[in-house]
Length: 300
Ligand SMILES: Nc1ncnc2c1ncn2[C@@H]1O[C@H](COP(=O)(O)OP(=O)(O)OP(=O)(O)O)[C@@H](O)[C@H]1O
Ligand SMILES: CC(C)(CO)[C@@H](O)C(=O)[O-]
Ligand code: BAL
Image (tube, rainbow, N blue to C red):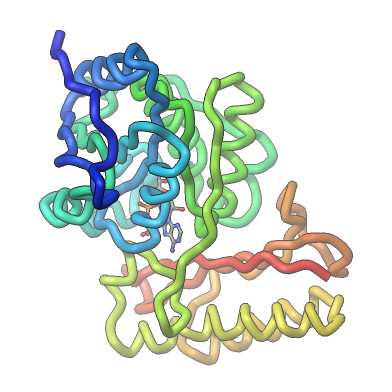
């Protein structure tokens, strides 16, 4: 079994030494267990790679919460239905390694997480939370996410796991899974980070044409207008929602959904009288184009 040196945290300049790169589940588990034996806590940041500053904000948060930070980079085929964008999902493992230098202690970059003989049969489902929003258009997305996150939790055995609230529904589902299945993991949710012009940071943004990228700014523009209106007392979710749909459609976006939902259970609300999340998914570039998601939390 491989042995790993786990002593030493951040250097004086706040940078960590070069991360250990782990390719197999066994190596990953041994590394993590060695950390724990040393009395260190382990914080995990699960990603699909092609890292941007949104991801790095999670890694920096993880470094403040755990003694040792592991970032996993794995494009999980189990959450993509046939016809979705698995084959064109952006990948840049070398660039990811460079971006993570000095920020984490280990990078888990497995070749595969499922058996090669296609025999995987066990899936985790969050019965109600997986139904609305992305559950409507990505039929196996959330069972794939919940299952791969459970696998990562079993392989890494982290004390803490950090997720972004850009994937708000995913974050709720992971929290629910941890609660329902008694995973001994603290789940932390970090705010959505945006580019300077408002576009939600996303690995998929690189696939937008210049024209579509400009059009896609309508999403954050419309969400911000809606938040301002809510702060000024607007409560009629149906009218506000329609205004946002119109703004995105006029910009060339093909709306998958725009929903005003209760922030805790994702049920659609008609009148804004509690904390809500306005969640959006829209496609730019037609069939085979880029499906973007975004959201904004709002309170009356
Ligand atoms: N703009 C962002 N702000 C904060 N967290 C983010 C942001 N984008 C992604 N994350 C978080 O990073 C983690 C890994 O996400 P992932 O690798 O799928 O990146 P992504 O940019 O969301 O990709 P895509 O948008 O193409 O699905 C998730 O917890 C996700 O919520
Ligand atoms: C959580 C996750 C790494 C599972 O594949 C993915 O859905 C993501 O990057 O948000
Ligand atoms: N961040 C979500 C990963 C996906 O779209 O499959």
